Length: 192
Image (cartoon, rainbow, N blue to C red; front, side, top):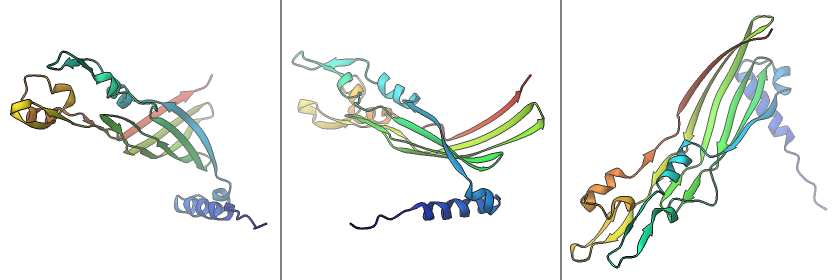
């Protein structure tokens, strides 16, 4: 039976280098722990995609086209956040978002990076500061191809295809939204 490789040595070396880089002693860096701090599904971008599903339009033959079929997904964007403790009072915040996709929209996967630090101004109080940034995670709406009969075929915004706006003008109304890119959080807690 072949031997199995143990990757703990590589993980410990990476943790040690990260800890030393961030100012932690080598002994502290070897004792770094990672904890799950948050897990949730959905975001305001998922809600925005769902809101695009409202409505529909009628084709020339009288059949109804509902937007609901285009803006639903079997998987809602899942976010998992972790804290890797570097010192007693500081750590690296990091996480991932899976993204989601429907027929006419996509939320890209995302990566969260940041840090958390705290100090104790008194024995009964804690002042915390965290800064996080999100990379990726954009919501983009996809166009449709619409056949206008004698007028030709155009790439259009699906939701505006049956409106009075010129077909080529509808594309500027496609949704292209970004998640909250930078978040600064300051908290002061006093215990009685």
